[in-house]
Length: 454
Ligand code: PFF
Image (cartoon, rainbow, N blue to C red):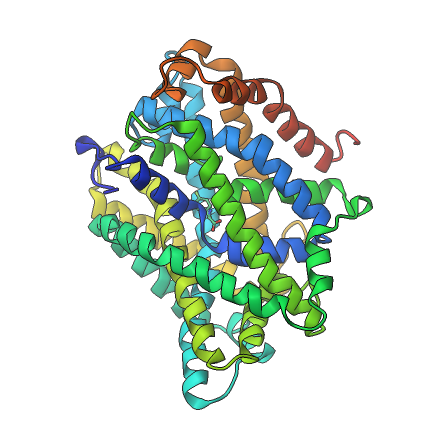
């Protein structure tokens, strides 16, 4: 895909290209960092089970609506939602909330991406010196001042540069080639972790649910993760939908993206938890879980340092595809206003994101560690506000749009393009959208607020 000015609207060249780009937005830190860390902090398999249900009954249907509305409107998310039902401009609020979410997400996402980029160099350096990274490495990095800020600035500069130059074609190519490599390396990690003595406890932790552990808050985290993972509820997939070729079959594409994305998360979990248990670590290790575990897994292998840095190189590349897609949401909207070109819009957005990123990055630094809003530091607050509030609310509106507000005939006609008559899965997704998805989101939101008790 080329994210050039909306005037000359571009399109993915093929269904395969559309699939790769959509998957490129979905796969990122969410799989390798957030999924394991949230699973570990929320009791393991019961969380995974709720997460899988959320992907099936909320994630896939909403992905279908976003791609469908995007392709139908062929515009930025704000304009697409604001004009999808003539006379109902208020739906543009979904796009505006999405732009807000994009800023909040980037503030902490670039912090973590900065840690990943730093680890590429740190692990390679350790390999060259014949040493290994340990728990102190992460503490010093994340709790530092200039070092994490500089990495964050570097990551943002890189992403902004890519967006400004509109060279996502190159990125797409790189992502497409390196994504399978990430997959292979994850499998190498899995084999190593699963053959460690005591690994079985980690597998059980991931797959043997203890439903008594579930609380409304945990269910909300699983729902929020489903949105975050599939880049939903904020217009990213609507924007990508606007580049979708007409012949792409939306329901099968959305399903494949969700399946491939979930497979990557589970592979990451299968590397991390067996290792955590085998090495006597704590699954509830928080945001540092990935950074403390991966070097440990590889440290027991020949050339472990090299594997560690390769792992972080591939993770870094996966983050770029996701970050480009987040930045594109506000950038496409700003360009559409007509005051700024692509470069100006990218610089403005990147600059604002950096400003917002500073408190997130310093929230583990003694300077800001004690500053809490609603009991959360800035990092956690931005994460919570976006994943657990804005994205589910955006998703609720999108589900209502797809299931209730849009004309069933128009919606089905766009969703089922590529088929001679309405396929069974089109009817199934529509039924889920109408009778399940919005109610599930609503019940989860209300029960986590304590308004209802389930
Ligand atoms: N899906 C990405 C991940 O899991 O890392 C994060 C993300 C990308 C969230 C794009 C939201 C978004 F619009």
